[in-house]
Length: 464
Ligand code: UD1
Ligand code: MG
Image 1 (cartoon, helix red, strand yellow):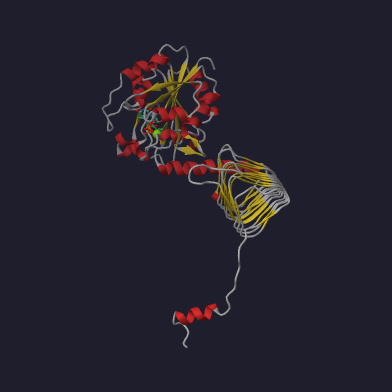
Image 2: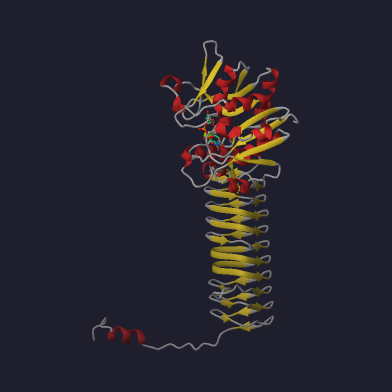
């Protein structure tokens, strides 16, 4: 749309969030609020998008892909009217309409915005803005109308009388106006109100004073225009995001045993006939294949699972890959750089990091595998530790194929074990072991008969 310019207001402190983070960077479904508004804005293919930033401006710029965005700095946050006025330089002579969006209203859709624009043009209005009817309008600006139902002004909650507070029709914070009118009206604003701020909402009364036609469009789905101003609202909206994402995956053939406790972020993909148990978090760019089973209490961030993987109860997986038919857990921790081949088994209390495990490798109990490559079909016994760190640097361990690593083995890196090596139980391996060899530590084992009774006597536990 060549005749459309968009201004997104995102400079506010978000006082009611009580946060050090700019409000528009708080996340829903793992993505910042502002990125939702930007997505809807881009969907309209406007000629120009500008975002007004101020509080935490640099953070906001870093967090959102802004290659096609003009950033406008509002140095002091003097109110939404002042924020919009900051866009004057960029848009004063813009040949078309200006759409103004609040950066904290993330659910707004392209379709609704298109409807608003269509209406604005059909009605030949100078200013059109969106309203909605909410059963609980508290916190929003209310639409005050005259006796014939014509709009008169918007009053903010804090400035409203008791009677005005009862009005259910609220201001969504979404406006379309001609730049000529908008910037003239913004110059006329005063900050004589409860917050001593310049309110963008006052352009409605200004328009009427200037005898310019003002129209409103009511949102069909009031949920679309909900704003995030408090942590409570953020939680409520997160719930709505989760419900929507969960519905999408269930419709696509994924079983969620307990959708209420399943958290799936926007960027995640899940294959058919996968079954997801309670208290599961699938975050970031996590990909889960088909027919996987996730028993429950799983926390996956950027994990890639191919098909038929079984994650048993309580696992944490981060930046890792898991091959077909692998079984992981219960109580396992796959850290970044872990790559499990097909049919790998990782059992309880096993931690891996930068670990490449070939097909069919088993590490079933109490093990740490860090900075290691393990060949196919190797079995890692209980209590095996790769000692990869000497307090200064990390060193690699390489283990061949079909190796049998006995229980209670410590592998002091850097060290290499060839194929078909057999490591005896309780061995500390410090040097490379050639293929097919047995490696063990010489130890003397003795048993002293009668020792326990002697000791007890000495300690006075057994009477003579
Ligand atoms: C605003 C509207 C209210 C409406 C509600 C809808 C005003 C005065 N009130 O109230 O009528 O019902 O949105 O969600 O406009 N911002 C700036 N610079 C500032 C102040 C705010 O850029 O100096 C930005 C904020 O970052 C935010 C947006 O403007 O993205 C709205 O500000 P906020 O303080 O949330 O306004 P509300 O009280 O929600
Ligand atoms: Mg708000």
